[in-house]
Image (cartoon, rainbow, N blue to C red; front, side):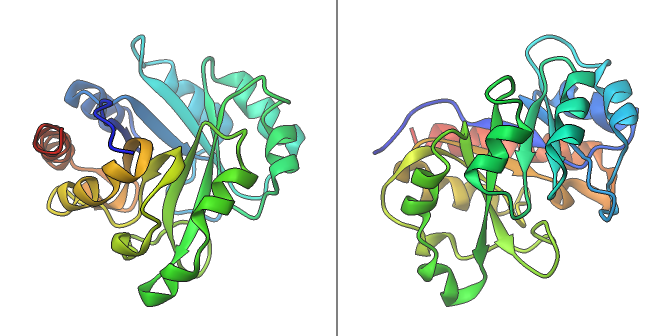
Length: 226
């Protein structure tokens, strides 16, 4: 299932204008805003819309939700033109469809992969089939609470072939993203990567140099694995 499709890059957990600008200038494809009040990177729908208004064409805003009501998700998505949803809680396939406006908005579905050897027991093939309406399955580490907590699961334990677009997340940094790409790119329709804590100075505060280093590492790995 080897794919030479270009690897898309998303920087998530943006809270400041200068960080959004740094991500755009580094050449990312998408930026993420966390609309989960319990997160240290949380922003309101109004703030997400304000930040997203700075985006140039062809950079996609993504709104992250955790067990939010369909009414609130649809309302938030309506505030941000061109936004995708990312469901990171316990949402069922039917709830994801309802919360994305019945197909009005594309969505990503997070799969929470257990850390260590327990990751081998996660049936990603079935999960991708259950959430076949998702544009991609985002792979994150399963830790207490929601979100990967900057932890990386064991990528080598994932199935050798998954009939879905995958987004690798959870504990990625400029130093390890190449290894994740090398291991996962041949196993899926296409691979994207999503980074948050790995390009931060502190929670919600990004480091422009780390963002540039991350993008450069992805592009180098992309060439090496083509």
